[in-house]
Image (cartoon, rainbow, N blue to C red; front, side):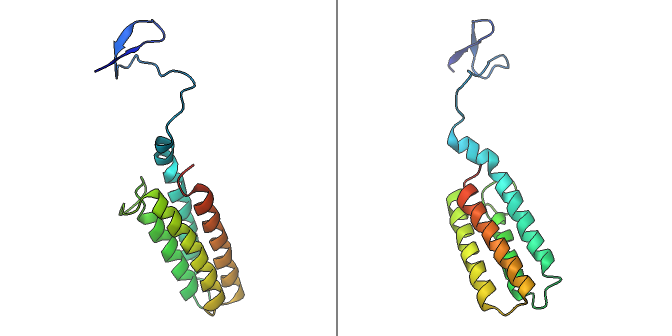
Length: 140
């Protein structure tokens, strides 16, 4: 094992010691930042999907809204991150699936017959999902 310098005392201490201090201004690697903050993206997607599922109760024809809700929740559930249920996809595949879900949601809103309020909900959810996937698809 290597040795590190304790910045308070100036002595050499074993690595992993509770007295070891991390140097200031050393950046956290991007992979650690992505892993650490990807759960926030999952949480937002679960909220978005479950909110959309709750909107199916008031829809006259709930098929389109329910499909969008199922796609969003299942995308959040298969990501390899802390809040996932199945851990099947990495963050890049999750980002691409999120963009595809946003595009398919717009197609669903236009093609499947539903009332205007349901169409607005599906389009708003598609915009939110697209923004979330493009901007924060790999974590914060």
